[in-house]
Image: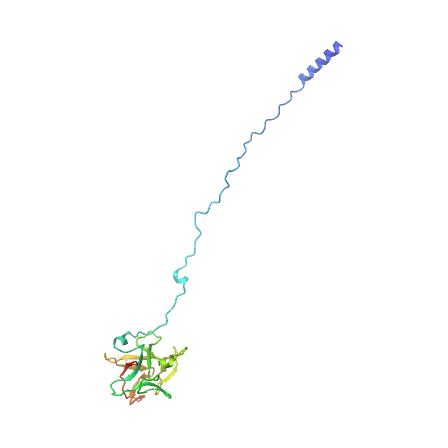
Amino acid sequence: MRYMVAVLAAFSLTACAGSPAASPPAPPSMAPVAAAPTTAPTATAPTTAAPTATVSKAAAAPKVTKAPVSDLSQLKRLGIDVQKSVLIDVADDGVDRWLNIEKNGVDFTGTGRTDNTMMFLAPAPVTAKNKVLIKPPFYNEDLGAGYCVADTKGAPLKLETCDPKRQQQIFTMVPAGDSGQFELHGMYGVIRVDNGKITTSGTGRTGLQTILYAN
């Protein structure tokens, strides 16, 4: 019995001495752990600003072209009544013969202040100086193109619907000295008056003057 106990004990000691010792548990991994960012990254704006379109003032707003208009300042300085209601009179003939709207045309037969003798010398739509349209106010009261006196190849003159392209409606007022007198030149020549009628014979008076209608 003792012998078996001794053998068993010796066997146990031998088993313990021969078997490898139990390995200790592996230590936890010590690999560095990246710390979570405390602040979310922000996008960095480009340092160069995006190009902006440059628009010149001329391109931004369309250019407005003014319609041409004749310069009448010389006539005004000489005492010729333009841009006012006037009578157009044959000067120095000793009688009242005014430009007049008639049934058969426009002639120097007016002898009183009426709707048919009231005229208005308006700047013509051209760049040349001293160019006018003769527009009787009574015939230009309504809306629309209005009416203008036009030159003719013969006589008398005539009244027709205003048309900026009609050269027959543009007259040149040529100063005759510094007394307020002038000659009226139409498309077909200078206007001449003989005994109250416009003539094409080359004879007659050419000196005209304006008289304020309201006088």
